[in-house]
Image (cartoon, rainbow, N blue to C red; front, side, top):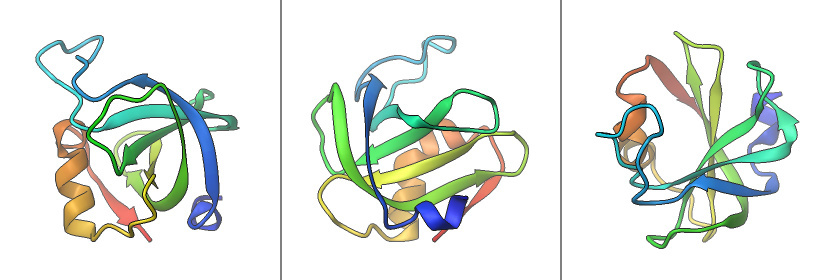
Length: 111
């Protein structure tokens, strides 16, 4: 399921906008918008989580293209990387943008 989502347009809800604090780890601030896509469910049984790139403004909703998947090897969740502006971000740039939370997990990008 993961690779076939790459290149697909998805819509969703942002529940942790840029600048917000992580609900369980208040020292962690979101440096990108983070949300979910209701129509797809992740391995944890919850709606699919996404990191949304392409704006520095907090969002409530989004529509964009899945450009990559961060596959966690030490957790059941994968995170989709969504581009709002159509930019196909380089791997290094994606990794830098999601580092604020993914530094606590092992994984790799799927393109």
